[in-house]
Image 1 (cartoon, rainbow, N blue to C red):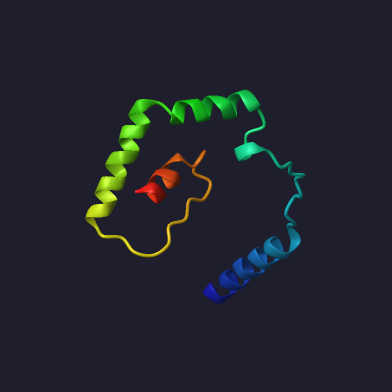
Image 2 (cartoon, one colour; image 1 turned 120 degrees about the vertical axis):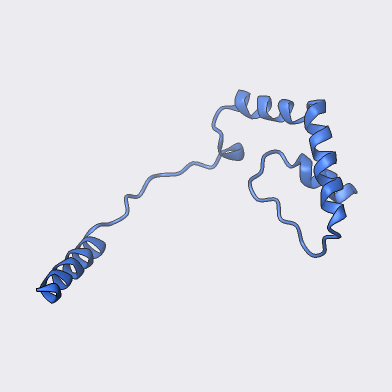
Amino acid sequence: MLYVIGAIIFLLLLVLSLGLRRAKVPRQISNEGIENDAVVEANNRINRWPQFRVLRKIFIAELKKHQPEGIVADIGCGPGYLIVDLARS
């Protein structure tokens, strides 16, 4: 009986995985994935606020305590102020 139930579940999963196709959604290239230029500018302006500069300095100071080596990748993390500050230090 367990073999029959297992076989049915297997066949059901096989049919579902082979039968369902991924929907193709047209994509448009835009600045930081945001389509509204006003939102992009607001994000950039907020990231230049003094409290964010302080947070970046604290983060870099903590990172230096661990004596990091190697490569740092900044992937999709906003306008890139952190990686620039990190490179300068």
